[in-house]
Image (cartoon, rainbow, N blue to C red):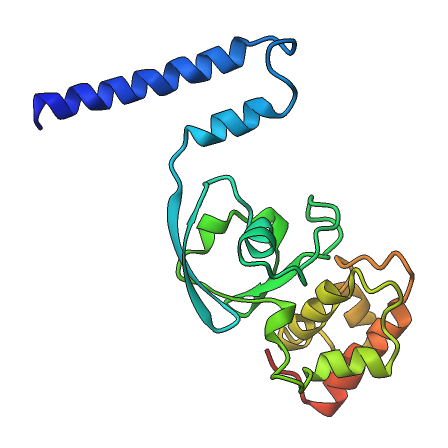
Length: 202
């Protein structure tokens, strides 16, 4: 390797190391709360990311720390996927990755290189709603609606996974999705309707 390149590499490393050390020992009086995170993040290079979201291929550049949830909402402006607890405990952020449901707040965006993501926005075909969306309307499966996108995504997955053979089974396998309005019976009705009609699809 060229000596000049080695020197540049060492200089870059030393600059970053010095900056990180300075930020680490800085007092709160000098640096306001939250500014450290932004300054540290600025030192890291973004990583290229290629994935397919709702049938559209995206070539992106993301920071390693960005979650799939934040990428969807803030970079791709798909705000149907909701940020609830941000700890993987409420299910509001449920999406499908290669056909399997996940909590998008618990996975880093860069971990989904080359994968196919489906969000609530990708279910309807124009004005034709997904059968699960229609069932939620018919069965009145929502009140405030905040948890509804995650509930619908989980309901579809529940059927695809073979876990909708009874109301009790649906309740068990949908237990990761919290509805603070208490619309649980109607949500189960909606899932059972789609299961009975055999019209579920991703």
